[in-house]
Length: 412
Image (cartoon, rainbow, N blue to C red; front, side, top):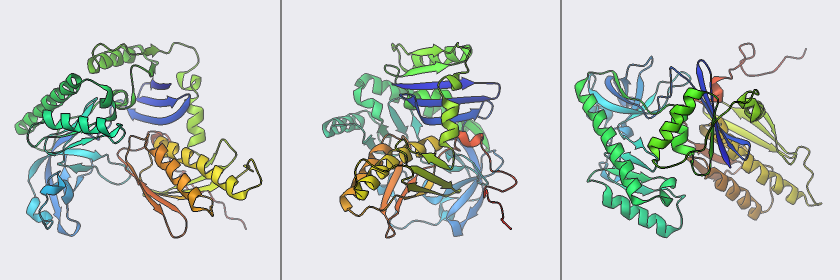
């Protein structure tokens, strides 16, 4: 059973997703500065950079947003011109346009924006100008996916695009159509607001943290929602009822004297899972080093000696366990960019494929897109994971100002 645990305090909302008591996702945001990803702005182009094929857009934040040419071209790749035009043909200084944030500002970088607009609902994602229908690969069997795609083609209007989410698989067509109507109306309101104002101006902000988590990962029929604030309990119960009319959500107010995150061991797991050295349940270890764009994970057998005398079996069992834990930690830490995993060397190709498939299977449970590139010539596993927001736990951890993250002391 999954539990969504939402903790509120004076300045913060924190949400932890537990699967049979094990932490698999964590997010946090300040009450006055809730997430920007997915929000719409009317922006003004302040600089066009031909050498980068990009433009900088003032949307009213401290740093100008970055708009790459691919995010100005049509969302449907089949409608792209044979040769990519110059950014100067697509954008000009002073031009005002409607943009949506796809990646929040973090570090020294501003937000990344696009004109490939999308509005997520409970069952589908509405893309007003995409002109195609896609169905979640997690919906099975293939006959259901084909049926869902045909239904999507039937309800969309010319030029519109839809992505049918995994949770749409078991729902009635009436509910899917209602979700689409709601998203269409929201889009019309955004466009109307854009026509009334001058840039820079925020037009629409996505749901707050707890509501996003409910929309994206919470199943009211099987999951439990636990909150420690009475006002939040009422607000979230009403949100679930509005999102899923007729549902009986399992929303519970935490009233025990023990703090909620302590009661469900959230803090304990965060401290353990965000360390540099993570112990695997079987005795192996992961050494986790992370930079802004690259994460390296080293797998070691540690104290794991295996169940028999075969070194290959011992190594493979450790790597399989590591693959599961790495997939969980990538999601929990919300790692983005390039990821390199140095699994323990395996001699047999069949074992390498078993480890690869185990990792791919576990990554499929992550709602953030990942791509496994494969094994390098040096025997390292290479993959990438999309980054949208700053890691929730990252807001509570910072680099030591004395050593700047090196953690080394000179020996004389």
